[in-house]
Length: 335
Image (cartoon, rainbow, N blue to C red; front, side):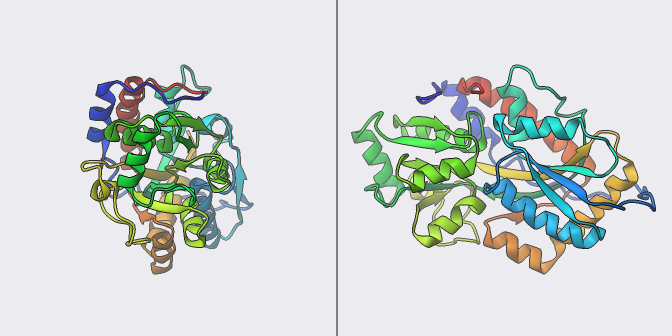
């Protein structure tokens, strides 16, 4: 799909109402179950339903390293990108519920039920929630050659060149796409959508100068910003990121009221032993409370956000309901 997606006025209202809803609730104790004494006895696979190099992949590798230490077994990353994350998610849904397959999902997991007419899995019932792991703002970046060094300058440039500036996304209906559509609507600019299969591919073409701008995740974009390959204009969250406090928010930089935040969490196939879920939840919570993980997350623009399996499952259900309305109002459809 090329060309920006027509966005109904209701889309702006719905996406603004959606902002800030991913904050974790106060924790309650998970079920007191005990993992089988024989688990784990072999490597654990963690599916990442996106290509290597994107924000979800970067976070998954940090989580896998810490779980490796906690479990005493290797945690192997299995990138299964494609179709907005649905291909890898299907693999996870249909895997044996034996504790040896996990999947690290992003907000796209809750967007896809509204984006695709049918899915080869049930987003809620085919998975057992373990924990929310992190939240993160996106970041608006442009190619350094683009004559816009601020959000206001970008808006002014786009208005003088209607339909000439293009923006890359990780795919139609993904968080970067919807973040860009919110920008397009609020700024009243005509910019053209160019969807890719993942953040890494989208970033590569912006770095190469083939596309003007994009709204990727912080973990995937910050190294390129720091190396000078990309210019950061703003972050998409409600407040500045501790990872890059010098970069203003979009609301500060010219679009008051703008906010779009991503989240990431860990799931297992449905019917996985409750004791294994409890053990994994405990290990993830301990990992996120450690000082070194907090520091590593902060360096990537991520904020630890552990919650209970029950709270994470409730968050996914609420996000599905919310984003189904947003996707419908935006007119976005899967490629």
